[in-house]
Amino acid sequence: MTAPGLAAWLVVGAALFCIGVLAAVVRRDRGGVLAGLSLMLAGAAMSLAALVRHAVLPPAALSTLLIVLVLGGAFVLVIEMTSAREDES
Image 1 (spheres, rainbow, N blue to C red):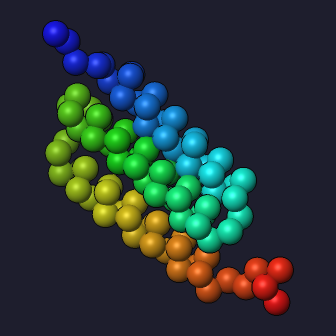
Image 2 (cartoon, rainbow, N blue to C red; image 1 turned 45 degrees about the horizontal axis):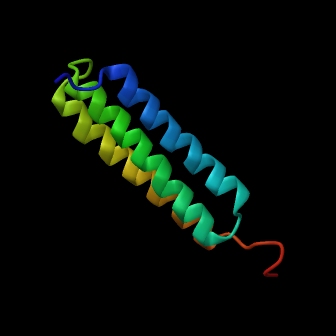
Image 3 (cartoon, rainbow, N blue to C red; image 1 turned 90 degrees about the vertical axis):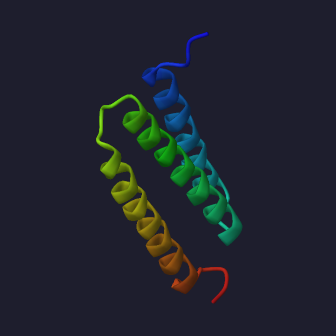
């Protein structure tokens, strides 16, 4: 039995990322943004893991890029938590 190819994994990763973007845009409360961000990180991590598995990127790139993704997500969450909403003021 053959495993799914690189294109299949990249399509699933892109689909997760797009669903995350839609979740963050449609639900503007903090829970929707958090759910959307976690879906976007999952999609990006899946795409990166597929690129490493199929030897497009070296294995060291996965750990470095995942750390950058998590730090970026944390940065977005901190900005989201500290910003004042129009309806909360």
